[in-house]
Image 1: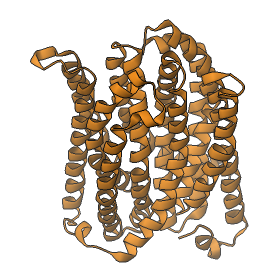
Image 2: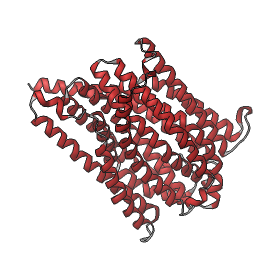
Image 3: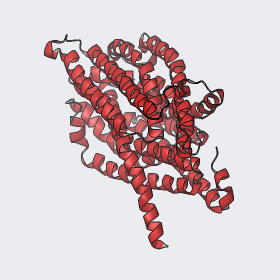
Image 4: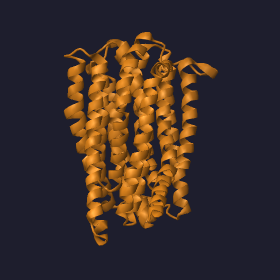
Length: 459
């Protein structure tokens, strides 16, 4: 019996790692684009760095709802994959692409509007002046980003992860080369400064969208399903929307908290704002690994539900959690030990590095909480539950984290360090709530009879 349990645990770990490693690398590729933008424009000065950070925060506030909305296709797609139904999985893709188009067009208009009035967000005049043109160009990458997110979610759900990784690598090469060329005028290109970086980023996002479109088409042709995704299904559309709206709200609550913090920190000095944006980028990079683990966990749990094996889904969830938390624990140690060299990769501004060293400690402390909450969010999404994560993020970030951060930052005069302390407490509250929800779900499954197991996990 012990040998069987150990073999089962090894199989679950093997499944998680095979899917999570390429997925996490793809997510890291997304962050690599942002890192390249910061690294290239960081040599233009603190104002340029702060402008990119502010623009990225605004852009994230608009891209996140679309990414969350199309994430609703993951459960029916992975469930269909578990049932062996190409039709069910493919129809989920079609409805997800419709949602991507419907959401992307008004989102683009919203970003363009905000780009023209960044002064209303309280940014310093020099930062607002630099960020406006950058954000106006970046807005045109929203629709391709939404479509990319839909196709990525579909491919993860049917456990196709290597081809998307190859597409991501190619897009990153394009982004890096175009950034260097258009910002500084190398290789015969015009020297456009900050706007050149935005043009390069949009081009890379278009490349990502087209690359995944080719990958999806090859998958459809290989399964004689070239037209299945074009058939509109009201039932599938309603299901994806029902799952996607809470997922979008959850992502908006999470990213919105950090975006609002970025906007508020922009009221401080340029060095403090630049340090905040750099540390936020570093924390986002480490976050991509458990995010990939969470996506893999979601796909595998959803497949288990499709196969009517909820107990296997529960064990896969716990395995994914262990992998995600373990990585983030190592990440926390690395951030504390190597803070100055890491910050030095982004900027040579002494004040920004001094601020960054202090807030990197806070970022390191919430690494485990961050890894815990994102993996559990994926695990719950694999069961068709997107509501608990939404509620946890509302409680943790907006009722605990941000209020504490605001008080520490401004009335108590702790500045950017106080803001990050509040953000860390908020993430810890989210993780604690989701851990309790997943444990309770596991208890219900364990207590159910074999005939009733398929009814414990919501359909």
